[in-house]
Length: 549
Image (cartoon, rainbow, N blue to C red; front, side, top):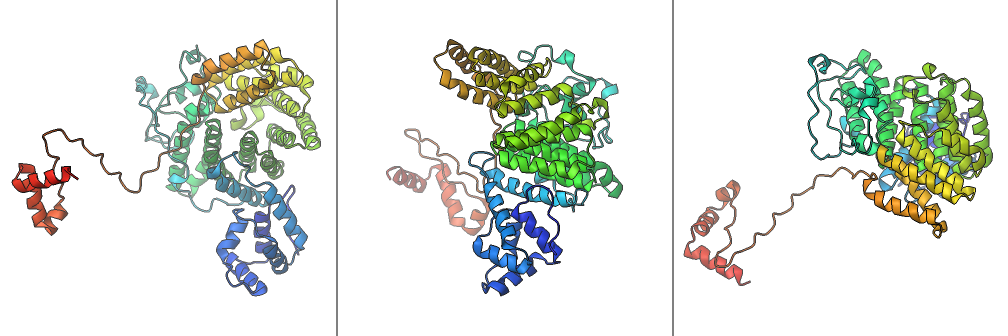
């Protein structure tokens, strides 16, 4: 009997794994049965593993034999294979480095949907599962803290040991770009600027600064959570697993905002595993919603729709009204960007019915930022994507609040696109001018990319004076906008040879360097090198002959 299919579209890899496990087969046994049935003895369990992890999609030959061995209609497998191919990585979205992480996240999401409280985190992950913090220019040391605020040696308030100090923030959020920011910081954000930054403080600092400045901090917090979990006992693991899931979700969000989508997908995979192991389906749904938003902004709306629907289906019975509304907005945006207007309208209507039940104090701590104006702005963004800019205009205009530069820049970009759809070029340029300054203040690469799309759409109106003024402003502000963070440098497998030293006229080059091993194995070479150092006739002749080559 074929197990019931989970709601929403299903990919071939998770479908094969579900059918195989329903028959009680291992990957090796399935490979052996396929070899026996097809008469091809070369198929191994490694190929079955690649199919289930979505790294490869089998062709028609193996799909037919899979249907025979698993006793299912071949049409079921063919439809899932076609769906997997349609959701293949589009060129230039998350890049080649993110294709493996993206495929693995899709497979993990389908397994999570089958059992959102399953122990997917079998063992404590290694500290190197997330890339190292990129090297930052040396920054001035933080000011001395009063003794009463010193970081204790024990665990921090968010459940993580406080024995090591985090790296300094990369420069970029300066007083010139954010005047008066230090006076407006809450106590949690003030703590985030200090070495004892907490997870909650880093979340609130993310409201003011972009991922280009905070990505290193997020990666650091995630590695600390991984190391703490690795050395914890059973009771400590139960306490630290939610911290690990939240740290991974925030690290993935910051990586996406820093222009590192592959690192973001990798962090989201770890966050989903930790949320499942902690028995928190709501947090797992939030992780998948954030991953959906990453793919939607990276130009993969079909993949974003799969993740958003999976997150909603797996967490709806455990999620708060605000989280359900947020995930429905993720579904609506992905559907609108993917050319599915009816699905987008249905999701928007369902999210609107939940908006009245959202209470800021009744939501999880990691949804403190979700309120009525934010939900209204999400609705306006989707309406613009659906080509309905008129009702979206007041919703997006109200979202440009003081003290939230990144949100003002992002929603300002959508508002400018709405004005363009209405043919209001001057209004679009005025909104884009203000959003450009907010993008500089926030340091958000996502906001900069949104405004770059606005400039691309403005190019068809290049004859307008307002468009020329905006282009000049964008050119002057280009050096202040954030750029993608460089990938971490990999150590060379073999040290590069030292550069050749220039020879001065009348001097012979320095003699060869003789190591202790060379001296022990070849005493004559040692004597030759010593003679070269003292300028013996033999060394001088050798140097002269070398210079004439």
